[in-house]
Length: 389
Ligand code: MLT
Image 1 (tube, protein in one colour):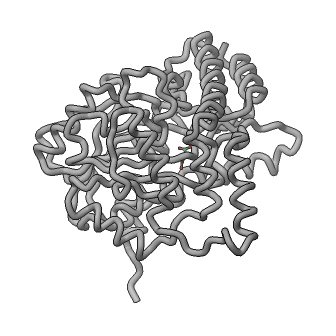
Image 2: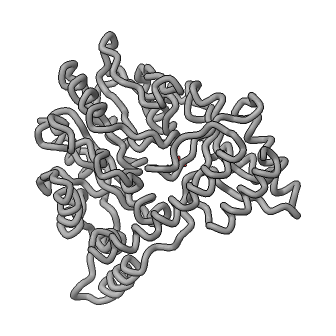
Image 3: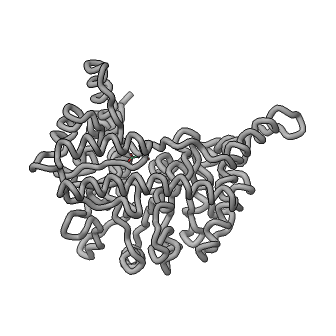
């Protein structure tokens, strides 16, 4: 027996597990202090009414012989795939049902999709970025190279034609920086991918936070993207499904074998998302569901505004928060990101995410999320302003 030695090349633990461990340690030693978590991007508002109704109804169906369901289609029930198809159609993106695959979230599929690609592919990942892209490739032993995102390019790296890569990760709106590509910039990535025969893995998990109609929410709004891109999306941040788990992946048939290969992979290794959850997800795409989730998204955006205004008053450089639930700030007083993490936890009992956890270019930055409650966000910002105002 030989173990997969590539695991030796990973960070010791997943970023958010390290943070949880540090926070729990702090709490156990400071039981009298109220810690406010603005770290991991986990939602706090409950599922919307329309979703709850659909979930209840589906639970009842499962208790009746005539409507009970066992194994479902691995790629998702048609009712949900049709709802996703309709959602894309509103943005003039035409998808066939067999290009839509229902999943238990973007995180799983972003990792699982790598089953389709050879181990010797070179992977281009922006730095900083969601750590799952790097970790899943390191586990498979692939070579990862980085596209530097920094203040100079407003955290939106563009293709470097001198580099030959096979797989390109793009996350827009970006986690952790909140930066969003416009259509021309995404067009440049699509053109580059097509010229070099690369595949773009486009993570659209935060698309619903885009408030400017001119900004692309799907890569398929860009000409030629169906020939070179796979898109991942999730209801986690869109509709509060972080604990309920449902998302979708689009593998266009224009990508040739990849569409059938993904179906083959899913039918072999995945049993699909539970019927009850898919019924809840379907409700998100109804007119009423869309209205209700928008109210929740606006609530988080208002939190982002509160955070951003506080940082402005404290003279702290920051971006994001506008088309994204994340605010990306420069650590004050030249602190490094883990140093600032400890400082904020010790002195204000606020938990954020150190930029270094997203890559070397995050070393001097820090991420705050707007997914907290209004009350906690206000309280955290009052504490923050006392320290830095
Ligand atoms: C984050 O905080 O970056 C996200 O919650 C992680 C995730 O979606 O898996």
